[in-house]
Image 1 (spheres, rainbow, N blue to C red):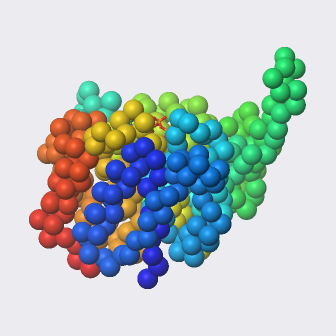
Image 2 (image 1 turned 90 degrees about the vertical axis):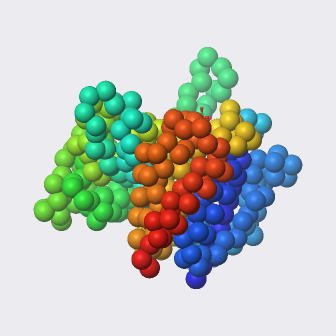
Length: 349
Ligand code: ATP
């Protein structure tokens, strides 16, 4: 069994990750954890390198990471994030970023006025290409003639494999989102790969939306969506919208995975939340649900479902942190969830 590398990181990362590890432990799956607690902003500030080559080698050997969040107002966000999170995503070729948005209780949706809504979709964000590859540069920096270019990279291989995964996990259908009416070359490539993927899966309902329309529909009618597949930057933005209509960042989990190598990095969608860090009030459910995605990735499907069921129960009972209407601390919220998990008799594995 591979060790799971735990990188708690900065801000609320350590607080919520502890709850995720304790919950995975409570499931009794025999998972083993190795914590790399030094990969954080303090190390980056004092040594200039948060993640050593030896750390990366250790992580690559395992291929499984439970991640908190990194970031610190004292460090340049792009350099530090690039040297840890982007390095892991690219170094392990975690080309799929899967972000489920499920409404755990109708009181949590900003769309709660009216009838209760059945929101349960997944944003599949291409994770290794697009606008965030660092291709481009600037000239005449700091002058009135400054020119800055960030190229959006799409490859037939990269687009083809994420579309294939979208069809592989579809329950009710796939919606591909692009901006092919304005982004010419990449748009053409996405459309060509989309036509191929649809032809290969004629039985799966398929739809296409431009990103501006998709953003609108995610707010006005999120129930229509099952799997939304899109590029790196659109996925980044649309998954914050879907997280918000499904109850907010405190519940939004994510998985960065490669189904070929079986590597994966599992992390809450939220960041380090410096405004509440150290107060013991961060919602641990996004980290715990990310842990459930890790368990599912390892084949423990009923254990993951048991965690999700326990989340439904604690949210409905208001046994949760203040961001979603409760009064519990991070630790109490994690403990309440585990109490339901155990009282429900665990899971049948
Ligand atoms: P970073 O720079 O690390 O991304 P940020 O504050 O810009 O940090 P988030 O960490 O995602 O971005 O936080 C956005 C807002 O959501 C903050 O007000 C934060 O307090 C709140 N928030 C994020 N995560 C949680 C959580 N787990 N529980 C409660 N509130 C949260």
